Image (cartoon, rainbow, N blue to C red; front, top):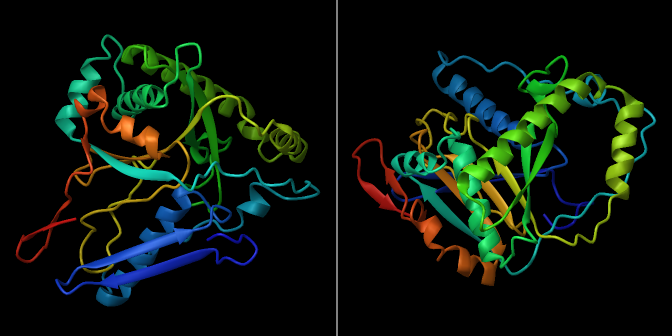
Length: 316
């Protein structure tokens, strides 16, 4: 998808293998929705398919499709130029896998603060990324974390509302920061994000309020003088629930081409985590050799895919 004026809003590819396995790839333009929209679509598609195969499988509840009218009415709002993504042709994407036991050990290093799995892993990734980018304590990495806005609006909107309903919180990370310091920064920023959402949640339907936000975003400087890392979490979404009638998926993955992009998602067991990181080649070469990171994560380990009939193992 390179031409926004002519590219489809969605592309789906299905590959069938001689072993009997099936891989389904879905690509959706961000103009249509966020990760919540994508996962709800795939799960509903699977549920409908399963229903017509087995009849006893319930149909899903319909999504809210008119958010552009009922939640975020366009009205007379101006349409501002899109901000470009910070993509780079030399960026590479690598997968880092954190087993549940390693995450627990990592969380223990942040004592006396009690981080969540996401906070501990995110803090470590940002700390090691700052090192890989060669940033000094005086020039820390600015990390932007996406947050689902649906349940934070006043009143909340249905979880299956189609669209881009996200906000962000920011924090700075340096390679010299202790993990507990970074987790503390994240918690404070998240609390601030929650407070802002509660304060302004009822105003997201106010066209004047939204218009002022869009104006500020469009006028923000585009030539950033600092390194920015963009993080997104798929954790606690129902990523492994899509059953097309053949059982739930054995592995789900994503690919990033965003410069300094991070995607964090639950492993299949719901306890471990898989982190996809996209950086320029020379920076990635330093990141995947970082001993602080390798103490807790494996780089590109083989994926053990178990066939449901004979439990034979396939390496990817």
